[in-house]
Length: 161
Image (cartoon, rainbow, N blue to C red):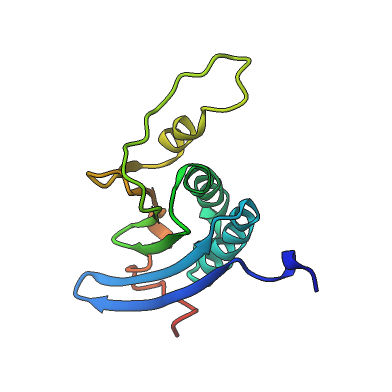
């Protein structure tokens, strides 16, 4: 086995909460500050979304993970980051905590610049996105198509059944 075969993240929480409005599912992981970890987190999200019956959102969520986690890995001064993926109330929510204060800013890179488009991509793909007041957490949401919502009486989370 090589180092690439070992996950660079640790699952810290996997839960399902039932309430009057339906159910909420959440996965939280602590991840190393290693660029290889971004790909592993994309793969982890693909498996989790499929288990939740939301495979149709995989491409969008994976791209959002690439951008938000990639920014956290590049810009944090912490030793690790925390990544949460949850679904409920008609949306999938991605949250990345890097512990670094400071608000990200959207850039308008020129056509020849190789970077600076991450938040433009997040803004285009996410229904909503934002940061905590101190900038240490960046989050976004992606709507779940009405027929795929976990609170629908015809849907259920196969992972929790």
